[in-house]
Amino acid sequence: MRKDVPLAVPRLMPARLVVPREGSIVKEPRWDVYYAVVFAASMAIVQAGRLHPSQRMAATAALVAMIPWYIVLGRPLMDLDAPPERADAGTTVYLGGLVVLFTVAQSQDPNTWFLAFALLPQCFHVTTMRRAMVFVVIFNVIAGGLEAWRNPGLPGALSALGIVIFAVAFSYVYSRWMMKVIEQSLDRARLIKQLESTRAELAAAYHEAGVLAERHRLAGEIHDTLAQGFTSIVTLLQAAEADLAPEGQDSQARRHLQLALATARENLAEARTLVAALTPAALETGTLGDTVYRVAVTTGAQAGIGARAEVTGTPRRLPTGTEVVLLRVCQEALANVRKHAAAGQVSVALCYADGTVRLTVTDDGHGFDPGKAREGYGLKGMRDRVSQVGGALTVTTGPGAGTEVSAEVPG
Image: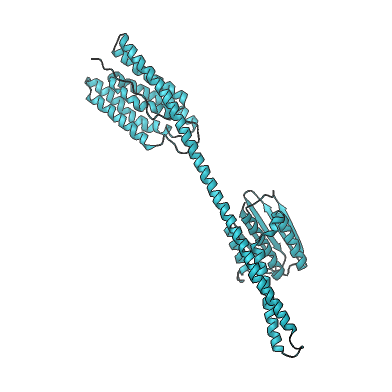
């Protein structure tokens, strides 16, 4: 009795693509489930068919041999991250072995033709479109030839030929279509990653802009309230002192007024320092290197000491927050030199390296013992500032050995 078995046509058949590796379609576990279901169905058909025991045994042995062949050799080849040379070397061996096992099974039971539903997609999973089509043609020609051999005559040959032509053509067209779908999916995945990255960058930029806006707002509030208030207090105290009796009379009141006046002036200076610290106006008039040079020269002139500054490496723009941090560290370190170091020379070095920027302030003052000295607010503030931008601050000093303050930040 003639058995006309329709040639299996690959379904959900993605071509192996030379595209970015993320999101491997082939690694999807449901493909393994699909292959297992088709294999189990083919095995059931062989066991239920009216075959001679030797035919059933041969077909079953061929099907069973496909399991370790797929697990040991085929599945690793479906890893899209595999090096091309390894894939090219193993593809012919793997698919050639499948051709042999399929031929054995098909020659014993024509119904194993259904196994092509699992075998044809694998051609596209392990190699390129062109190479896959070669094996698709081989599988179909062998199946069609065996079917024509079982049903001799022109009708049988034409039927097998028509099914082979249809299956090969459908495999080609459908695989090309699926290849386009996968390419579009991977393009969308790349686009989504780019959008997420851009969104993160925008969020960071908005955060930095918000921080700077808040710093400017606070600077304005301090300038318009505290600084102006202290200025008024200083003016009023000076007027009150002028209205006092001549020197020697009301000396107690005069001392209180002078103390209040000194306190007001000190707090006015602190308020102005806060405004300057919150407003990086110096950076708006030049590069970070130019600003550091001006700060160093100004400090040297004010303290009456020798000061020099140098920039090494290739200068580049850094995030505003990072530049502000380096500038504030430079200002604070120079202020410490002026107030505490009793130095004769101070140098500032700004070094641009690959991926980092280092600011170093070195003086030849009397230094201090780090083990005995308690870290003041200035050093603690510098550490906090630098750590906020992902950097680190180191202080190297010793009694009579001068002090070196170094801040290194990513950039």
